[in-house]
Image 1 (cartoon, helix red, strand yellow):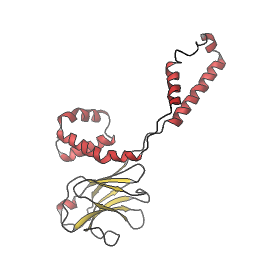
Image 2 (image 1 turned 180 degrees about the vertical axis):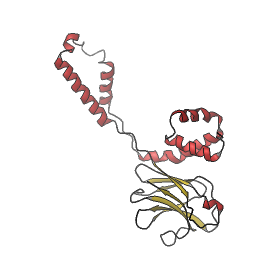
Image 3 (image 1 turned 45 degrees about the horizontal axis):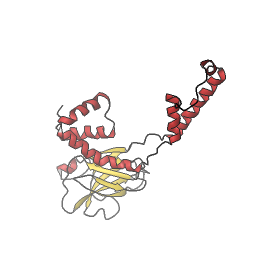
Image 4 (image 1 turned 90 degrees about the horizontal axis):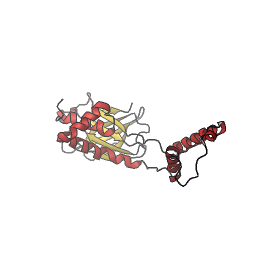
Length: 234
């Protein structure tokens, strides 16, 4: 497999950074990274694009009391604690029941104190729209990747290929609902990643689309030029 091909390197790097590249494939990718500058550059580019989205997730640290309880349960009481009771007393039924109850209480405390794993960003691939009427061969094959933060307030759109847009024209990103008119999310770059901050990006959104508009954006609030790329959230 030719890992120096930009398209292949970019796709594998995206899966690697997102964590969807797993098992033997991920171990092989780890082994290849030191010897492949193309792979390293692709990984660095995706980390720069996607990792800022994690800033919207607030970390939560378990309290000291919870960690002390865990250590005591795993490793026993500290040396300063009182000597344990004889083994035959610890095997009495009521002792066993009390131990089970304590274990259940500890498990509940840990479950309440430790937050669930953060939700992964939503990843949407926008593929070329075969029905678009464009004269540019590049724009007819335009592909993008949209990454939406878990809280639905941040979006990063990245073209998978460098695109050339005619002078006086621009690319605009749209949120397309299942029913109703699309709403503009703003102008996007054709040759680099674009970061957008909006409220409720995923609310009432069935797909994302990119259109070619006049410089400065659509004058009507709706797409006026060809829709060159579309990606469904389902």
